Length: 499
Length: 107
Image (tube, rainbow over all chains, first blue to last red; front, side, top):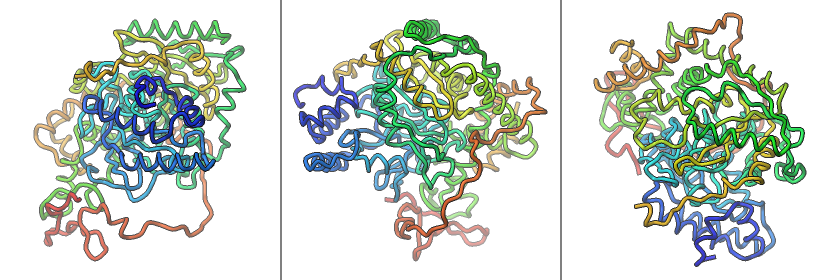
């Protein structure tokens, strides 16, 4: 494998597995080559906030020993990957992109970290993200922005921008991110990769540093929908440590894709009339509509549908998510772990100084917004009101899924924007999330896959599905990828082009 | 439009010490967002039940069994300050001044 730099650029998870199974490459080869690539590219792209070099090589060697002994643990065994830095990893620094946790080395593994380790995954490192997953551009990390591999002057999206960029730049075969209002799907869209947000309750949140607990969900970034099926298989299921993870049987996702084949005959696809509004970039609209037309030629039945409360989703989200965040982030008081302001002072002054230094501007904005919405005299007008509108938004989807099997539209209203372009205008930044937040409010699964380019930057196609029906989402995404090659495009990352 | 006093009041509730510049920029930015959010008032929700979470399954319980937990040393590993196996925290009462020190940010 060494000496063939193109191999890694074309590699899917399934390809990597085939190469490992055939003995053509070892996990150590694959891991070393990926670490070299990270070493060459990351200075420019800022994708990783911690590179786990020694740990990764050790895990790769152990995987190679298992393979030699005929004790391969899973299809993920020996495959190098990364985790967003809000996912707790035992003994591996986890910062959440925050100064609060600059030196935090967790004494335990989160459930997804443990499951992947048990499956034999090789952890390359932790990927950069907006601080505590709050943002749509990965500019809000205390460690500096991540950059879009398609054009480093542009954002990779967020908040899981490092994970999306890592997969797009082939600095790891897959990655896990988290999606509270679109933080897997939107960066997947902006970086031209596949990003899946599972149903709320499908994947355990134990060891996911909480942002908004009724919305957060962990999901994979991969090159293909089939690869996403492998990763979801490894992380899905009930966990006694997360009472919101549901006791619902986990289907065999890969087998489901094999059985269903690539025909979409009889599949009812809903096109919401509310998803083509103001702010949608014309090139995005054209590409997404062309993709929908193709679904029709592949046998899908296309139906116009209505989701009448769509326009209220963003405002609802920007009350509920900050309210939950303001409560969750109360724990960063500098008492038991993390940063504490230096100097001798009483506890209130200590907290005020600790939190002023520890949090960045966007996290402060959301804590303030959430605290305001929950404070005496405003609770009914803001928080309760938002919870009531959430009922209406979720109801829109319940009604729609009586008529159709899957809903399709754009993931993000525009392609990637320039670094710095929206950082002084929080409201403009929040408008990026207009097509992604409803899925979190309704708890339904969603996936974004590439469907075109505008000005050399990727465009994303979003599918939304019924609760716990990831199979249909993966099936339609896989069928589309079987008939298109947008997901196979690779950014030109010759080092001389990046400087 | 929020007043600087309102911003300072909310900041105190959230235990965020803010500079005067932060108070002013948050005042403007939060007011913008609140103006946008006010669009929810167009909807009559008087007859709508609130949704706190979307799952249909309600309460879950697990067997009440003893399982191993972290060792005290592991728990204290990330503490800003410790003493004799305890977290050492700043005084809650005003008199005793015990806080973090410059070694607060280990390692």
